[in-house]
Image (cartoon, rainbow over all chains, first blue to last red; front, side):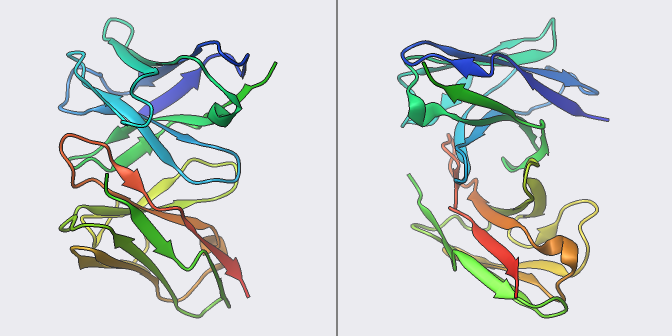
Length: 119
Length: 109
């Protein structure tokens, strides 16, 4: 059974870099043609697609975040990671990792992790 | 970027009644449209993809329709567990970005 689990600091200071990791179990990141994704949700707000990565390292980012986002993959650990630089309070959100299905809709989601940006 | 607009923002419906939620795309997404349900403190759950195909395990009371720019999610007879926030997402673009609607909160009347 596929499981995704986000991990990382729950508190980040303004101007610093947010770093999260998604650990995948029950499936191999490199065994299927999926672009594994990151999505976030500010408190009481809607969903925002951040970006996605293929096991080869190919990535796509939301243009609104592109200058600050880096998504990478570590197939040896079956993990993929998110880095968001120069964070502000507006980056406070629950961050989800997710796996799509044949189309790029998301079938499997992690439980989400709240990251608060505050000094 | 394709903008997804959902209406209404909040919908009040009594249990047992029908709920109809709308999602509009700023340009055609063909049938590359998904619907999700989200309950407080939980991750979104995929309900519908391809505009009208129910995901695994989704009850038949959930149905989706539409193509191009206009889409509808219908819940035929509301159960207590259906009261939640619903999001649409287009995945027509390649390469991304994919975009979500702002959500419709379905509340008990």
